[in-house]
Image 1: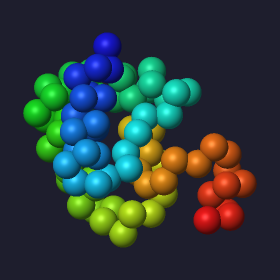
Image 2: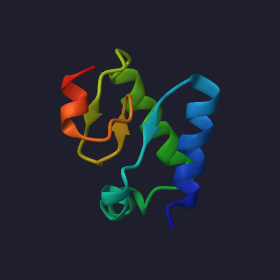
Image 3: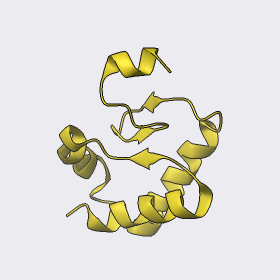
Image 4: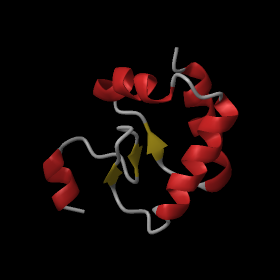
Length: 80
């Protein structure tokens, strides 16, 4: 059910060099947060959020989509 949204993220990552992903344990909450949006609306929202976080920092926002580097554990975040 997340496929259209994941396709948007994959394209944005590929075209713009972003590192945006949906953590495995957050897929349900992400779907619940965005299920009423079309892929186009979702893309506009992601671009807005990415522009706000243009510094590339590791962010967990209300939608539970991760922006930044993918880390395997919280301790990895502190080491980078």
